[in-house]
Length: 309
Image (cartoon, rainbow, N blue to C red):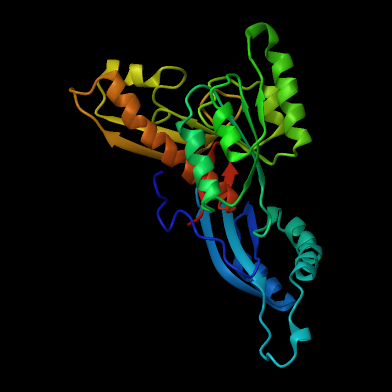
């Protein structure tokens, strides 16, 4: 299991915190408006980051905050109620966000999102993610594992996770996806991770989980989209191979990119060498992308992402 760098994964801290993600047209005073509201309500800002896209005139922001600690420990009743503060913030921020044309979301770090893993016959990415969840490195609950093959069933049983075999064939693809969507709703899943799931999802499936399906592709996109990218890279004689993790959209391998990494190769490397080295890249870029999504560090706009440190 390849470890994530400290800056890529921040261990969960106490007390519970809230994360505000927002984007809107850029204008003066945005940081002051948001920070001032939090201060007035009695919140303490733990982390704050922002980004301006000058070409598009857009502003992006991530603020992690919690209830301010009382100045005196003599009166325990003075401790602010975090969840009451969250509701007060929602009520006060909603009209402000509307006035400033903000898209926003508020997430609580104490909640463990429910995740579904989809995979086919290559199990290295699924096994890596399951290890990271088991060790507490990924703050989520794997609700179920879905596959069009049975290879992953023993791994699911080892981790005590429900496994569902949903064979996919051209004639039954629509029926298979209906079964999968019903399973996701029954469990109820917030994030779908395609851990080398070698099937193309239909637009109808993708529409149910906008910006909530993460895929890993075994090439440095946009190079070598589609199937057999290592074979294509070897045939082209490239000197670098890569892996890409991205949100899934209706366009094949063209969703907003979250993370990428590369490895240098040479003329001596054969396709089998590229595949072996690429598996390490696939594991780590998928783990990073999932960790950042779970930690509420990603904002999508157009076909791009902002990933906050």
